[in-house]
Length: 353
Length: 144
Image (cartoon, rainbow over all chains, first blue to last red; front, side, top):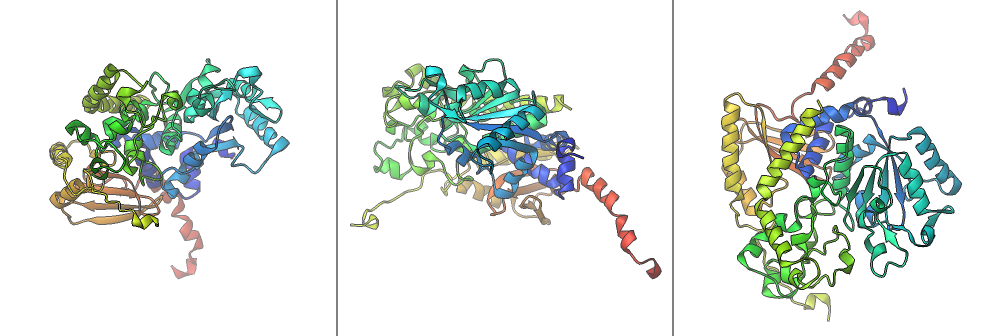
């Protein structure tokens, strides 16, 4: 029987991987996506029935930072499971093939999985002068994206560049760079912004696509709500100090040493949606605010161009006072919101059974 | 002048490394009490997720002290280790899913008869029922 014919459950059992391992993987993903832990068995069942997903990952105008981040999700053993769930048919940095052989690999993967493969895009796409500023194998990335998108079941834009243009699109944007959704408009697209994005988000998105057969619910910027519904400020462990009016005003004053709120030092936490505050980076070691630096807002559009990283929100172009008040109010509503989200995920899971 | 000549002093805040409690631990204990009541009346298994909460070290310490240790503890080897122990309250289990490096991936309080990860699952039991008889092919018939 061909690899793709087996369900993931059968495939893993063949490799001697027990249902307990599956449950553990699902427990990790459910925890990061705020899916109620009691739903883990249903999620594991559904995932076990799925088949290996063909994935084509294209690198356009990018720095490889996203790939560096993605290859470091969870702990090694659990992370490896996700590689059993997908068939990564093309990723030019990770694969051995190069040149004509690499192009053949894309063509074969497209042909065999037309209409079914998941297209992951890393990097922005230049539009200026017909996209000649970013070219691989004689083909502009603009043409490459259009061609690959046509046969894709869905597209995931990885990182702020693929999502919103990112650093490539920073002023004066010499190449006319944009994110994927400004070019492709007829496919389901999900953005996983961040510079770099969080690896657990990618694992969550892929698992959710496999287990529930659809991309997870998204916000107005096409970001998965499970990870991007809350602001950094909502979930920040220093939030209590913000509420008490205890702030750091320089990087070595008393407030900084005591770990107080970094708002006056330009922290963009109140208007930045991401999950760093709970998932952290480098397998849970730390994250910017825990290391004593304010959030720079890397998962929001145009974060490079919104004045300095060290200007407080109230002085910059990030938002109006109302916007910041709304962020604070959102924090209060957080408990209720996550309960609603959990229920929604629950419905989705039980509805699929 | 070298780096160590620059005096840097870091006082801890209420974050991950702080010994202070934040009130979250007490709220969690109340939630566990509710769940225990549900399960004691024959309700479904309940799970409290600990990983995504900004618990301080003080909070975790309080949970450890108040919940205590019970009769059962187990270590499971499936995609890295998982540690399970029953707290001093029968039916309240502490489950730690660990990575190979013993780093906590996710941590939960499970309220029910047996934690999910400890049960043998139907799919695995079916596979073992299929495999088990092959042992007789290898046994020497003259010995029986």
